[in-house]
Length: 289
Image 1: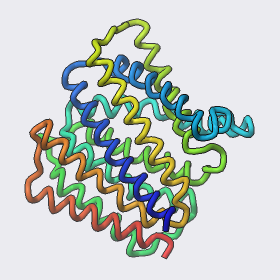
Image 2 (image 1 turned 120 degrees about the horizontal axis):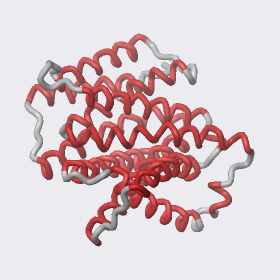
Image 3 (image 1 turned 90 degrees about the vertical axis):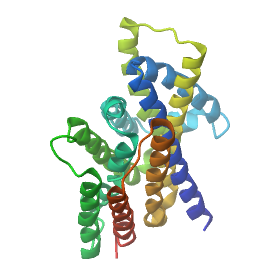
Image 4 (image 1 turned 180 degrees about the vertical axis):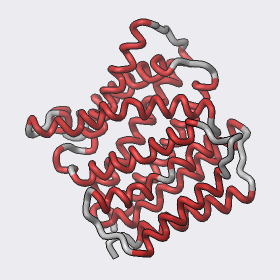
């Protein structure tokens, strides 16, 4: 029961910190800040805090130095393939409401089940497949796509959702090769290095307010990544119980969009959201049954 409660808290921490990061990122993107200034400065501060924190949870050697050389391959490749993800997030939030952005990300649990079938060889029964299909219908109800609101960023965010699902299916399968802190470190560092390549050619000295905002956001997204990694590390057989709590991000995203950006859903969109949450929960609960 203790593990279950910790898993639920970690999931809720992930969704809240993730939505907070999205809100800050949207604010910076619409105000024409450059992504490489934002991510390089914020990411550097976040990694600095992580290195300090690791000294209190077993040390840097325990979490960053892996037991075998072959173990480095997967975490580093995860980090390399993570590079376009934060770019997509930054650019998409400039053109898409944060509530729609969040709702599209919430298709990840459906893709997670599909990858669990393909990669982990988990069994999905008829109810799960039906719930997945109905869940995607809920997405269409919210979007109501037509030529006026359908753009490339919609598909890019769906790609992020697919990546997230694949990414954490891999973590679930290979959790023995690194701790949640190690996975987080190797996921974040390649993108920071990539950002500095652009930063060098266009340097930027932030004001104190900008430095605090960049640093806060960089630390928050690292916390969000760690919380997801940690949740799947410890969840084990309880993963089907904690997974529905990922839908709490719809609540945070909707609140941030409403409070800070004046965004809102109409009644039809709320029906679609309810369908997504219910169908997603049913699909997750029925996995392996």
